[in-house]
Image (cartoon, rainbow, N blue to C red; front, side, top):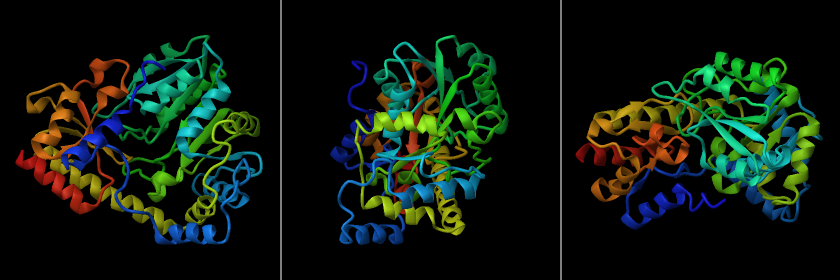
Length: 375
């Protein structure tokens, strides 16, 4: 773990506090989610739901997760044995890799990648093999993915919609990944926390493809969908034997978490389609506002298909060092962003790329756009 120090998000958020800059670096909303969900958590606290919940999560939440998967994707789950509640998606990823990988196994993953992926692979004693997603549409070379599979490959780690690029993997891309998984008898762990933030295309859970349900663990969480990131309520769904393996690891990590937040998240998952539609529409408008402002400021903008991040190329501004650019930006114009180079093994691919988050209030985004334009 020597290569992993303080995360870039902690570093840039501290820089935002120190300089008073608008923080478009770390991906957390600056408003709370629906009051109905918050009120449900308060009610649960007052009702005494403050001790250890069941290790796999309370029945109410596991049932709500199963119903959510059925409603949106037609996936049928037994909430008693095929759903596991976790301390956010981050624990779900860590527990899955620790459960399913042995030292020396290889994990195929796409870069740029969320930084915890590399750390979790290392914790499991496994090795990562990366396949690069390249702008402007962040497609991958199928031959490069094929070549990444070796006899040591244990699983494919997938993230769609994808952080940090905002890519939504297409049906053809997912079919290619699924074909490889079936042909080589690989497991797939898929991080789908941005499933309700798709602006172009369609979110397709890879577990719904032929031959994939029995080999796929699907991860999501309440943080991104309901804007309660600090509650750290996530979940894993999939075949009972794989979920049981992850549960064995999870019980020795956090054991349990978030007792009063679990019934509140169940309430959130029961909201009607109008909530999810309005949530997506609001974030799409914020994407369009920020991306237009970034383009006007001179960046080359790769407009995201999903998530709440937009990546830009800084070279049109006469520089190519994304990290130096982000360190100087708060002092120069009062805005914080994140250098994408930290999400790459092949640093040359991400050296000139920078990520901005648009999960902020409209007035905050407008202020950031004004500052960038003035600079």
